[in-house]
Structure formats: structure tokens, C-alpha cells
Picture 1: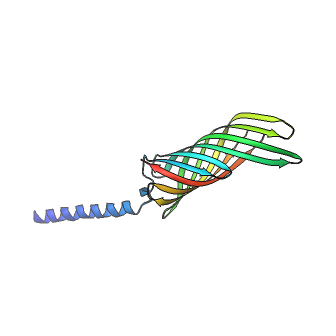
Picture 2: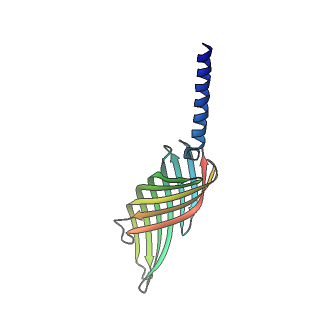
Picture 3: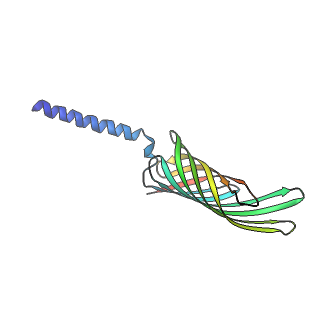
Length: 176
């Protein structure tokens, strides 16, 4: 009987120690299931992301993006404002220490307003598709991360763009 108790204690100790080490060494400490994240990122683009952690490897990401673009086409100068809303599924691809690299795929819609020197104005409401990449470097676990976001918006029905690239960088705050 005494031997059984010792065996039982050793098994409990091994289970406790092994699970403690396993949890401490996994990337799940940074991506806690059912946590919420809010990122503010900018560049030539202003973007607000809301992220909901579904599993340790997958997030649901809702993005609101504003792009101000101006370019020359021959002698004509075109100015465009794009307002975009997208829903994406984001997957963790690489984890190295405090760095996470993610990829995302989704879709949504946009409103585009464009005007050129000749006074020609185009307004569009169309659906679009998004492919995205995101890098997160955690400054404080489960709280604050530096974020770099790069989305490629595919706009097949647009008169102005086929693809619109939106590189941004900023900060993400995680809420529970």
C-alpha cells in the first residue's frame, strides 16, 4: 500500500512538472484563446483591426482601412480615396520567440471616390478580396505588440485598381 502511494505521488509530480514546462514553452502563451486584440496601424494607409483569437493558430480579423492615393497617368493627375471593410481568417505560420508571422485570407467591400484634373469623378461600391500578411513582435505578453500589416486587395470590378497594396505598421493592444 505504501508503495502505491509513493507511485501515485511520483505520477502526480511528473504530470504537474511536465504540463508546467509544456505550457511555458509553447507559443500559446502569447495567443490566448478567446482573447481580443485591437490594432492601430498606419502608413500611407490608416487601418484599424479587431482580432478575435479562435484557436491557438487562428484569428478572426475585422479590418477597416482608409487609403489616400494620388498618381500621374500621362499628363493627368488622379486622386483617390478608398474606404474598405474586410473580414479575414488569419493563421499563424511562423513563431520564433516573441515574433509571430501570420497570413490571412478574406473578403469584404469598399467605397472608392476618384477624381482627375479633367473633373471626371468615379464613385464605386464593390466587393473585394484580401490576402494579408502580419508580423507581431510582443513587447508585453498578451498585452502589447508591435505590428506590421501588409494586405493585397483584389478589386476585380473596379475601374481604377486591379490590386491595391496596403502596407502599414503600428501597435496592437490585447484585451481579455
